Length: 221
Image (cartoon, rainbow, N blue to C red; front, side, top):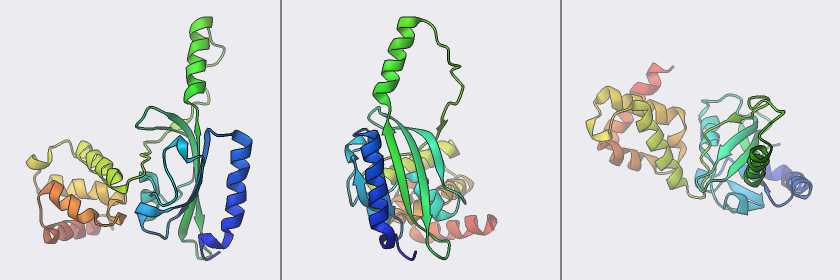
């Protein structure tokens, strides 16, 4: 397979299978990761689960795979918490071309919010559970789902500042290098025009940004 479009009809059948099996609370998304990151979604069913549509972009986890920070990005049965309070049980697999390059992703997000509320209600009514709370508990991944890649970049900037632990205005050079290292590993610079926003956030020039990035990348080689 050279392009995700070579097998698009097969992927659409698989997506329809999930939809028919699990119903309207199951969102299935097909990403073409050779496109600009703000428009990777080429097919989606039940987009109302996350509020996304064809032409919207990917999440922070996909950026890490494209950047190479995660060598095997496939994740199964992990929990995602959305900004509007939904709880999703998610799985994602990455699709490779004939040369092994990542070209796409197929992602499933099942909205289990109401099920968890019902579970909590029953537990409160019974006052007893036969199940160990920690048994088979899905992994929690901090996945940021949005239909606006600018919001994704804002999320990554906030995560980087949290990682450094110093406000942008108070950062010394080493803090800024650490800040940029974090962003680079998360794939932030794969987002179109991200450098302008990072420069504004850190109050540095593009020349300084590229010098700092060069320093960071040489240290990680």
